Amino acid sequence: MINNYCIETGYVSLNKYGEILCGDHVETASDDKDSAIVVMADGLGSGVKACILSTLTSKILSTMMANSMPMKDCISTMVATLPICKVRQLAYSTFTIIRISNHREAEIIQYDNPDVIMLRDGKRYEYPIITEMIDGKKILKSKISLCEDDVFIAMSDGVLHAGVGGVFDFGWDQSDVSDFLERFYDAKLNAKTISSMLIDLCRELYNGQPGDDTTVCTIKIRKRKQINLMIGPPEDPDDVNKMMSLFFSKEGRYIVCGGTTSNLAAEYLQRPLDCSLSEYVDPDIPPTAMIEGVDLVTEGVITMSRVLEYAQDYLGSNSRYAEWGQKNDGASRIARMLFQEATDINFFVGRAMNPAHQNPKLPIGFNVKMQLVDELAKCLSGMNKKIKVSYF
Image (cartoon, rainbow, N blue to C red):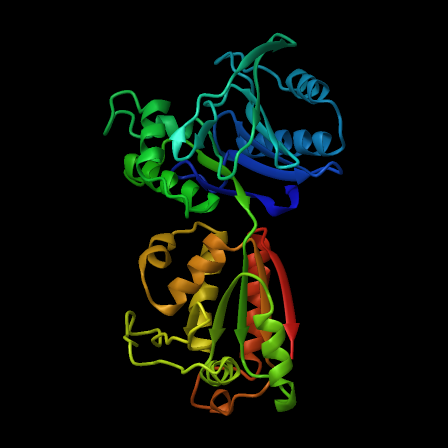
């Protein structure tokens, strides 16, 4: 049962207005006991000093914990290491640690950051908190038994400062943040999109000029889900049946990309390729088609090029999530399936040359299909997806 679940992590940051570097830092790690460790640190102030302090804090803590040092020793070492600012009487870096063990239990350690918000079934879940003094510092500790789709949202105090002196007189509190998260919760949303939604609201509250470094890091417990994508016919025509039988024997949902590939899939399944309902939802993306037994049928290179654009943006600011998250063209639907739904993705890539791609008037290179799949696979790996690519 344990192997049927995975841990999805996604975070987004805003730099304080005018700063090149962010004073918050998120570090992820794992240990030899199948535990996932996420540390978010917030360096005091902003700029270079805050960036260095938060980076060191998160890296030291995650490394110590990944090497199976007792939690108390990790915290004690870190707290003792952090000096106190004489002016503000605050530690030079605050931190939040979330460790997920065997997809069964979450351990949360918090030091001077806003409390982690937990959602269960889309509603705020009040988890137990124990206060412990370590080297004179108040540490909040929690242990929680996990359920499928549990969501944890860690944040730096830049989130609560958003809107101060503008929309809000004194900022908004965590109950306001929780209300927002509950209102827009959707079980289909992944961790990165949840973080992006909250960060986008903070950006608006700051009127586009954040007064503090602002970070949201979301962790979601998910059941594993497999998506299979096939693009291009095999190099050897005799391998068509082999490629198709291996593809359709996989568990999960099926995406078929490319005109020739779609026709071959329809012939293999002995089902018609239906293009009658095709419409240009996006004038730049060719319409989709339908084959009974296939979840999504799209054009090839142009559609996949857009998917790659979305994937590259996702790994950065994820500023286009509303675009692919709502539109119904082929590229947006593929993006939702790969980014939101899938945890495991199998690519079946045919090496046959497409004569249309050799037209010198088209801005498409010789190995464009291979390059697209290679770059997309790298991006998806960067999203912590489990990727397998098979060539034919």
